[in-house]
Length: 44
Length: 224
Image (cartoon, rainbow over all chains, first blue to last red):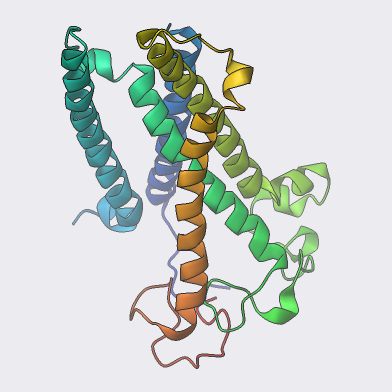
């Protein structure tokens, strides 16, 4: 059975870049929270 | 356009405008901060210093938390609540968590579906709620970040005006914290309610956020 209508089978490279995008957003959010929770905890 | 850019254009676009506006906010914020420093006879600070001040951190976290609350509530509320005719609602008959077949869980999962959707044990229970769990965790973490940074700013203000510094837990009960919190929440709730209601009658050709242009007004969830 082929892929659903409107989709093509992604090649491994596409899967990697999509995963990289997910990781990039995750890092951005985790990094931002870590930075500003750190600032809030430490700055007098 | 490269294949990478074509396949990820939506995420790349929002990433680019997020970074541009964050940098813009930081420069505008630094100028505002330094103008206030000058008024109080204090030294101006550099951009690098400003971006690690509670003043900037509080402003960033304050806006982040309300966005993640908005999406968390929207994800949760749309499981159980519907709006007839809205593209943002599911159909009235699908209220609730839906069947395993509808959700492609366990033996209903396709061959290339996520592994945790197929196993049908505790991992599936976790995975089937993972979007809401993660968005809610980000909401609480950023709200916590807002409270810490705005508390530091509040106490700096108190010190500048010969006031008494307050503890973090005391600050959580202060009108300053709740004004900053609620002013962000109210705008998010209005925007979400508006997209729910406006997609009943209004259209944008080509956007999955809209029903197809010719879809009847009382048709719910036309774009899936």
